[in-house]
Length: 315
Image (cartoon, rainbow, N blue to C red; front, top):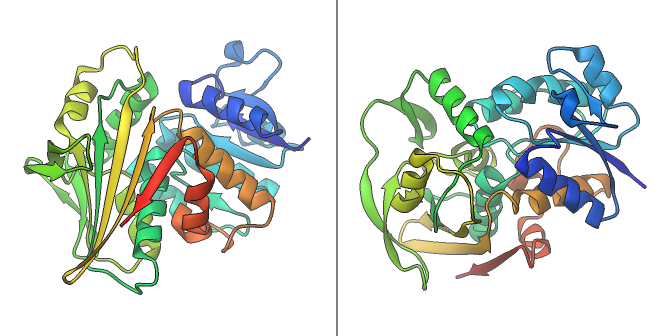
């Protein structure tokens, strides 16, 4: 059976990825920084290139689930490039995504192949369809709540430190750092969620993945206020959230829309990442090298393959 190394295999998302790999007939090879959590696995520190090379020996691909990705993405992706194998991560850290996209590689390297970043990119790409360009992409996240993992909180702190406490948005065809408050407004989600208060310009990895390959000068993310409050409270995660991701692509007076429904933003990152690896290993990648989800895969076909984990509607 084909072996795939999962770095950060003992974290919440890592455990979901390991289970998804096994369900699809892959052999997961468990790895990460903490040897005590990896009996029988392949521990390796990201500041030890030789150890990473040994960990990747004989595997067909690697999925990085270990944040903060500011510390793990470049070393692990570089090790995968040296080994000549595909690298996929679930990073939602904008700055770490930018670091990875700056790499040069002949083998497939796909950052942000997760709920934040990969899913929005696939939805926007599918919705845009045959349009060669568009004026705006809007990605609205309707979460019933958000109980972040310790890894999510640590990654967010690193990102804030890297941007000096400022927020970031993608407008006018470029990333901008700002010191003002996020705009408050309402978003009309599909029923039964309906109209909800959201924070605008709540930027996620979408502002990096989407404009990387789609000709669009403005990408804006929105997050329901309930989810933001849950993130700030940092309560212990006791239940999986339901979600609606509402993506709208606009060109003049025309609008195309793609909506994804599902449950558990951490669990659904597993089929996203594993489907990506499976497609790369079976020759279904459209481009070589470093690429985002919508750039390297057939977006509508990929989204259909995510059922029943995620259901998608177009209008």
